[in-house]
Image (cartoon, rainbow, N blue to C red; front, side):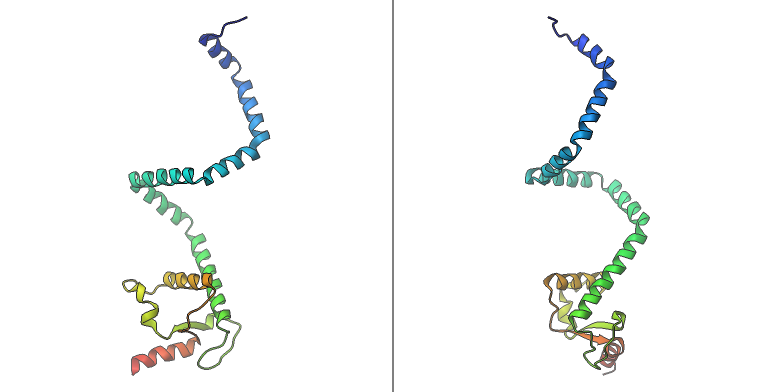
Length: 177
């Protein structure tokens, strides 16, 4: 019977290093699906999720310049994708709103299959945008509002569907009075 000694163990591991790698690779390949599933399930645990979130927060705070540089680089490299995605999402949301409001101009009764001729008009515009007092009414805010409405599957009563001509007449009529 042989007594284990450290030196012998080191020599054995060095001599059989490739065999050990092969054995681990074979085991991983056979068990890959189970291993990945266990890891996924483990990440879902609240304590693990909190720990990972806290770790990411600390890293982001301590490496702020590095994180910002990476985000700028990533956004610049993928700008075309984001622009295309935002444009498609905006069209989808507008189509949903136009369908929900009946595809008919509230003032003149114009009906069309084209979504781009319609505008959403706020009867009480000051109230509709009151919680965005210090922000310009950009497309992103409008998209955010449309997303909220779509999620609730309801459009507020003060929103009217107008064709572009009627919408301009209403707004320029307000200025001329």
